[in-house]
Amino acid sequence: MVDGVALSALDWWSEAGVDTLVDDLPRDWLAPTPVAEPVRAAPPSSPSAPAAPTALPATLEAFRAFLLADATIPGPATLRIDAIGDPASGVAIVVDMPEAEDRASGRLLSGEVGALFDRMLGAIKLTREQIYLIPFSPARPTTGRLGAAEVKALAPLLVRHLTLAATKKLLLLGDAPVQALLQRPAATAREAVHLVSLGGTEIPAVASIHPRLVHLKREWRPLAWADLQRFAAL
Image (cartoon, rainbow, N blue to C red; front, side):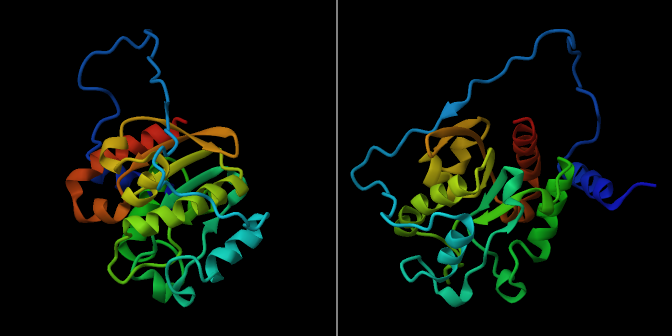
């Protein structure tokens, strides 16, 4: 009997355009597979680049409470949503902000976008319980977009969050977190593995399209599927 996770993965593969388990063209399966060299994320060189606040909580639990309550963080504290999942997994996925539906549910990625996200995870044999899901911005702006000033303010907080969680590999979904850590849009950061420095340790990171956009544009699903495969292979 096929369980729900397997069915979810099959649904995602079908939606992403995967209809065969082999390549269309002949392939030499004995030939060594070339491995792309990871791209190191360049540290911000501009004088206006974000600088980490001088005093931040020293434990993950205290830092998460700080993100939900501190007045210096963009967005009203009453509408902020916490990260979910298992930080000890070492697998972190960052989305730009909560969805509009998340305000009512109090949980990240609810509704149809969340259902698609769950199918995407299932396609690479993961569940929400096996990852650490982080909102780059704990609150959703009324405009539904994060401006340059907000990205600048939140960037060092994301680095701190990932460092305290002892992240081992990272998937960035959407322009805001990609811009914050890789200093480029998600569209140009895709198709590569990047190295991000966290507390003196470099970890591999993959940038991809937010499930919100994948939900709206089915033609982007093969692109997201390629990114997921790249992330799963880390």
